Image: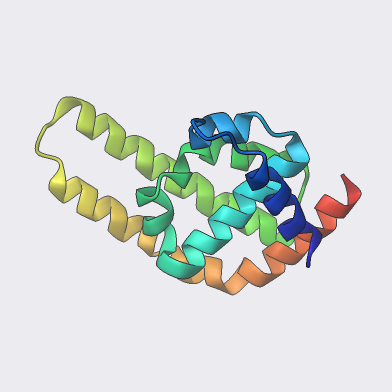
Length: 141
């Protein structure tokens, strides 16, 4: 078992029954946060793309994920993932602004899912290398 998976397992075993995902992640130390957030990102995107990652609400911690990846300088694949995440974040914020002022936002939502879905292929190209970089960083933390 990889260190990444062990850290994720340890973190999930500590999750309280009534805690939200956000509260759970916030309760973890940085090492476990990095493991959980990158593990969830990879699993969700590999199995259903960025749309699934968003719909299942893992996107709620995108700011922290970007912050941790930048802070720990995960590597060249990590830099590509950061660029992708920043586009996804900006697109999500644009959609949220539209939702705030317009009840009829279905077309914009479809466009948003199209935009973020275009980055699935880019992630697939770097995903394995990205996880190897994360594993190496976790070993040094």
